Amino acid sequence: MRRILLLACLLAAPLQAQPPGAAADDPAELIARIEAPREAGSSDDSGKSLAELMETHGVPALSVAVVEDYRLHWARAWGVADESTGASADTDTLFQAASISKPVSAMAVLRAVQDGLFELDDDINSILRSWKLEEEDAELLAETPVTPRMLLSMTAGTTVSGFPGYKPDAELPTVPEVLGWKDEETPANTDPVVVGWQPGTRYEYSGGGSTILQLALSDARAAPFEEILQETVLDPLGMNRSCFCQPLPPALHGNAARAGGSATDDAAKGRRPRAPWHVYPELYAAGLWTTPTDLAKFLIEVQLSLEGRSNRVLTTESIRKMVTPGGVGHYALGFTTGADTPHRPAPPGEADRFFGHTGGNWGFRGNFVGSLEGGNGYVILATGSVANPVIFIELPTRIRAAYGWD
Image 1 (cartoon, one colour):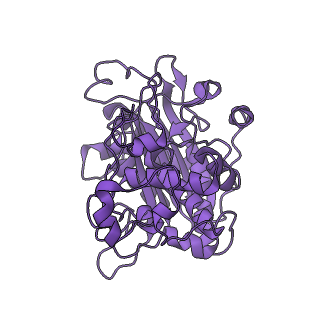
Image 2 (image 1 turned 90 degrees about the vertical axis):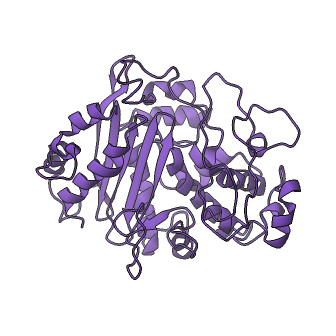
C-alpha cells in the first residue's frame, strides 16, 4: 500500500524533461510538423492531420515521447483519457503497455542471472518450485530441456501466444492456474501452456512462455513478481509513474486511460467498451501500467548501457543480450531487432539498426523503438482496438521524417 500511495503522489508531480541535445530542433516546431498532414504519401492517412487520424482510426487518447541524443526531447499527449467524463489525456496519464511489458520484465530476469540465482541455459524445471513443465511434455523435454534463454527469445516451443485479460470484477486465476493445473477447474480463460514442438528449433511468439518466466523469477527470488520488478528495474531507473499493478489500485484510477473501442464497432456507434480496461494476472507478458516518458527512461538506459555509460540495472554484457538475436528468428532476449523498424528484419548482409517491441491489450496499443547507435527513438501509447495504422505506420513515419532519421 505504501508504494501505491507513493506512486499516486508522484503522478501529481510535474513532468521534468531533460534538456535536448545541442543539435536538437525546437520541439514545438517538430510537434507541429508531426500534427500536420504530410504533403506526399502512399495512403490517404498521409493527407490527414493527427487529430483527423485519431478520429478516423478510433483513437480516443494518444501519448508520445521522443528521445534524441540519449535524452528525452519532448513528450505530448492528445485526446481524451476517459470518454465518459471528458477528462483530457496528458503526459502523466497511465496506459497499459501490453506486450511492451516483456522487455521490462526481461531486464529483471537478466538481473537475476547476473546476481547468480540461475543461468540462462539451466533447465527451467530446476528453477520452478510451484509448477512444472511435465507429463504430456515429458518426451520433448527429455530430449531438449526448456531454458530461460529459450523462453526469453521465444524459441522454447511453448504455446499460448497472448492473453485476452479479465473484466475488473472477474475472478482471477493464479499464475500456476494460467499455466495449467492438471485435472482441476480454474478461472483461467486460456489453454494450458505446453511445449508444442522441439525446443530451440524455431521462433514462435509465446506469452505463455513469458508467464513461465514470471513464475520462475518469483520462485527464484521468493517474492511477488510485481515487487521484484519495482525493486530491480522500475525504482533504479526512476520509472516513478509505472507499476505492475493488476488490478490497478483505485487510488490510480483517476490517472488512467480507459480502453478505447474499435472504429468499426464501439467508436463508430458512439459507445465505449463495457469495462474501463481488462485485468492481466500475466504480469510479465502484459501487466505494466506506465507512461511514454517512463518508458523513454527505460529506452535511454538500454542505449547508454550498450555503450557502458550507465549500468544501473545490467552490465553492458548483459544488456547486449537483450538486443542480440541468437540465430533463430530476430527476437533477442527481450527485444525484436530490425533494419528500419523492429518489425522488419534486416535484409541479408545488413546489420540490425533498431530494437523495440509492440503491444496490444484489450483497448490499448503501443509501439516502442530505439536505435542501437546514436541514442534516438520514440514511445507511442494509445487507446483503441484499431489504432495500428496510426501508431505503427503514419505517426512513426512523421517522427522519423521530422528528425531526419533515415
